[in-house]
Image 1 (cartoon, one colour):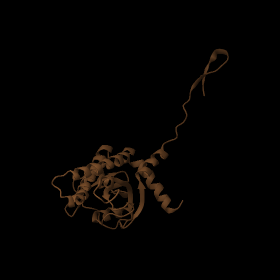
Image 2 (cartoon, helix red, strand yellow):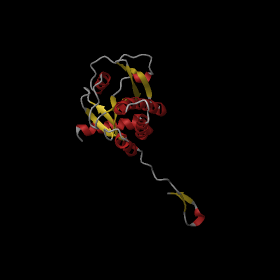
Image 3 (cartoon, rainbow, N blue to C red):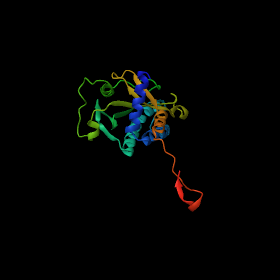
Image 4 (cartoon, rainbow, N blue to C red):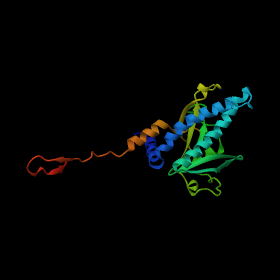
Length: 224
């Protein structure tokens, strides 16, 4: 097993250990619905110019996915803070559990990186040996204040680029771990890969012992 395979196996194992399966299942299904809902809202918005609907969709979808991440954290028992990541007077949702810290981001194409952001660079530094001061913390849940072993992003994008329903459906959503410099992905995992890892990790179930009647004198029962 090479270094990349060991990293992949280690992170998948920690995901299964630290994060509930339902978080990933809901992330996939609810992201699909969120993409469709926000498209139809922008399409029917009488206050939006046709020429600007795609720009408005891009902006509004970001905030809707932020809300989705916060809702998923609340439902599945992850610590969540919209104030710990406060950059340029904008706040970003950050959720944590166990060894992981998570944010969400749009990417133009799966495999591509999001636009540079100082808060992502600082969090990505935790995936190596951090040599910068930690973020300034306020009155936050205890869990979000702890160092995490890995920082990852839920990276997502639509099918295409035109302002039509088929293009603005969810194309892909992945869990990606950036390199310490946040210049490339060190690891990319599809939601299906993650869900499958929970199946592999299930403990092997032993066959049930059944009671049977032993033929012969007294017809005594024995288990087998």
